[in-house]
View 1 (cartoon, rainbow, N blue to C red):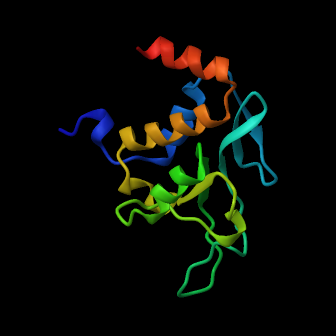
View 2: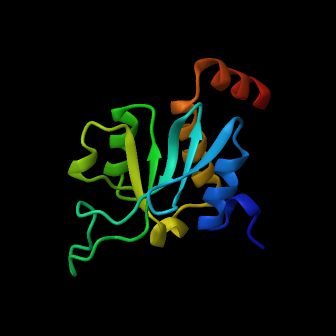
View 3: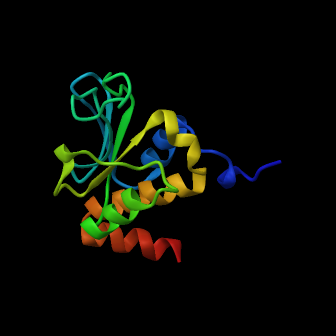
Length: 139
């Protein structure tokens, strides 16, 4: 049996992990899609189909893009340039501290890897005090 954290990640894990972070609120996006926030700052959200994220073969808009904030452009580039990860970006997100992931590819991550991405996203948007308190409680 595969340990809980080493199993392939699922969409339900995004919701569970994001909600478990401290001081999180969930807002409804334009199409009722969940937007996870800390201190009124989004850190994970489910994006509506947009013309900048399309299937290269069919030209159809991806209906399942999830956006995760990152701490810096260096962190973003490390994720999107690593061909072993399913993360990507589009020109629309140039200069924006976030990476994209298709829900259809979430199982390429383990639950543990997904948790780390979500926790890092939360830390990138939480106040310094909240971030320090959360990190201190984990040690």
